[in-house]
Length: 197
Length: 197
DNA sequence: GTCTATACCCTGATAGAC
DNA sequence: GTCTATCAGGGTATAGAC
View 1: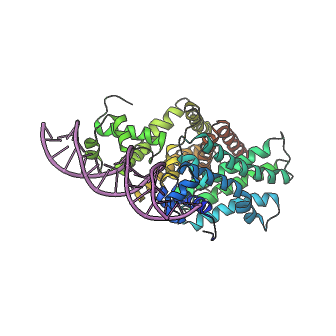
View 2: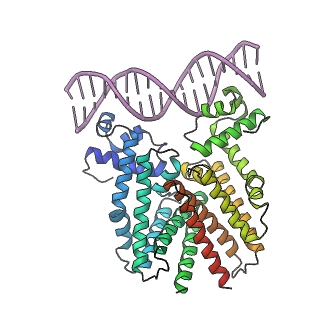
View 3: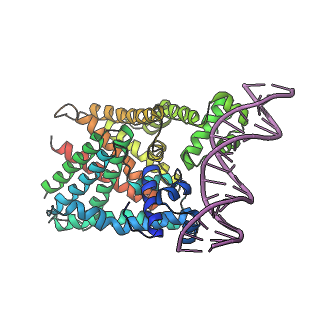
């Protein structure tokens, strides 16, 4: 937890960690209070309720995709296709670092919240869309010829699909090889597309 | 809900529905009682606790993969590769039937339960493995030549990965096209593999 | 803006008659 | 095996002094 955060940000940061570790429903407001060292009165001064903390967390994720996820993954990688796999490699690190319990926080929330209010659902899809858009830009920059103009986006979506599925299986089996295999099959698919040109 | 079920099975069946609709944590024991028309005393006569109801549900899913999922999907389809896509088409039906809120119950539980007890985790992976094994048999029966002997299993796992990712995205965006695109990309990949022989 | 104390409800689970 | 009534605890959220 970064030092010198103001009260509101301490709440958001603690909630972000906890929602990732235990999910939204399993995290109590009391959990957030104790991790953030904030009192109940202060949390409810900034947020009408727990749900609104979730909204702030999802906005923070969305804003952080560039600086917190892509830039660290890409700072020493410049080839656009390599960047896609560097991004996936970042997820592999997270899996290993968490003893194979990592779940993509967005994907986990998307499946955990069965009837989220529309604002939550919108932010979940915005997060996915931002990720897809970043990958799509790599694909477009790669010189991949697009037979119909929409393939880069579809392939980017498929890349997200594969990542999410791979993370889910790796977590369920507590074994990163399920993620590795997903990535390796995806790479084969990429190769087959490049070879077809 | 099937009529004439005994008390224990009514509990399991109601819980299976509710866990699928709302997840495990959002389903209260009171929810299970009211849907199953069973009293608290009876539920706790058969099960030590809510967790044990979940175990029974997961065992029921595992036992039902053949009769409840594969057989209906495959009764008019005999080509082994077509069977794989008929299975995926079954998930598409579920997505559409639920107004794009369908989540694979196993996958959803796998992401919802962050620290499941070992028995739960084992049943989750058993469910996945049974699904993978069924698909793997199709692939092996298809005459697909296996360069290293393990590709059928890996491709079956990748098929599950794609299904789970596709279901997650379709649900998040509330749009079946995300599932359709995942399946269509997977089909392309299959084609590229067959073409390489 | 921050603090403590507390209201009030719903949760999983139990007791004990039948 | 089934029933009703109930418990103890933790959940979100609020009140009101500072």
